[in-house]
Length: 310
Image 1 (cartoon, rainbow, N blue to C red):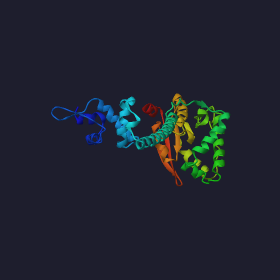
Image 2 (tube, helix red, strand yellow):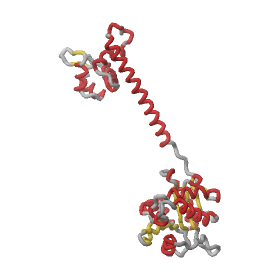
Image 3 (cartoon, rainbow, N blue to C red):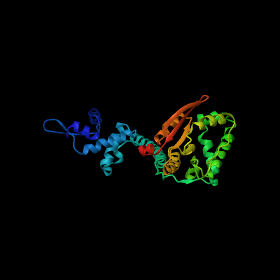
Image 4 (tube, rainbow, N blue to C red):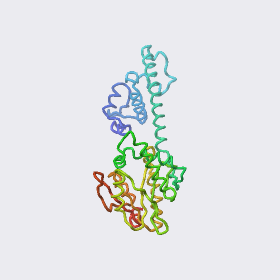
């Protein structure tokens, strides 16, 4: 074959092939017309040379090593002087160290890939009971620690954990008896819903609150429709489980109940980053307002929007 074909088949530039020939690493035959003829066996030889070069071996030592790759039995001590032997031993030891390092790195990468690509089972969504309270509270506190809306209500870093835990526990206790709190994977995510009010019962009664939360409650909740609807009061996913769509799974259980009732679902959010998240789940903004400096978007999901996004 011509040098261009050898270059294409080995991915080695022609100028390097000529250099290998100058160093005595390649020995093409000559045709009658004087052109070089690179035999088929030189495809493997070029790959061997490149591998040895990538291992850090200089060309002057590769020239000594290559015969061993062809027929080790023909090599004798007289073919290499003590200096060459010492150099090769040094290079061999250096290769061993590199191989050991590469093996450790490969094992670390394998372990990481096994962890991040392992199949994830579908989340287990259940109706919450009193036994889920501790996990729900922990998820709520962790999920909203940097949330701009909740921190508007609870701005003090020192008291946030205790105040957020008290708020989460209160909201959970108000709803859990109605069977409208769903948890995913034992509380890694939680969706707390208010069922629709009906003549048979008042639904969930939220006691008046003081301070900023009371002001928010008095303004925003009056914007909600007076007709029957499902209301998503809290949706939280623990940060340790982000990316698993557990919050979406927990929320879907309440949306399914609303769909079964033929009723719309409502929520409000003060986090602009959540607006698009809820839109992707079938909600649309029906009103936007401000409570002091806090923006609020009221969103609705009805049967038509759910069918559109399904």
